[in-house]
Length: 145
Image 1 (cartoon, rainbow, N blue to C red):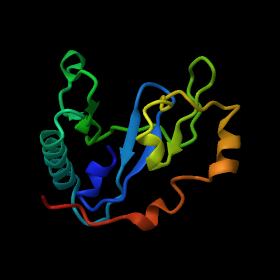
Image 2: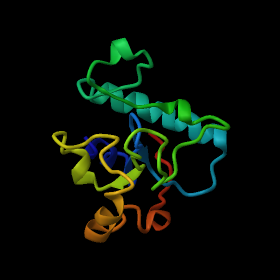
Image 3: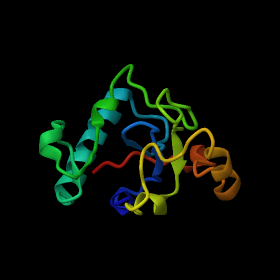
């Protein structure tokens, strides 16, 4: 699924939230204004959903999404936030918002937003490193199409 973003020539970084979802982050270079970025990325999300209708959607209503991945562009608004990497969530088991590697995203058998906990995330970092290392150097121009 992450390959859909390759079509945009953007570096993609993924993070399980420690709650219900997965954040997809694509660092972009500074320069475009907030409104222009939001408009362009909403168009890109719509195009991706149109090209991959069996796997992606921009449908907000859960009952209409089915098993498709929701491209939530509502986070592209003033004052919206996302959970910080490695933040411990206030949920049973103390799950941690954890950056993941792309190949883990495509492994549907074990990918769960609450998979890593305060007890296991340090071991994960020791074994696999930080998937978001160098994210700032990966910033690219925002795609036009």
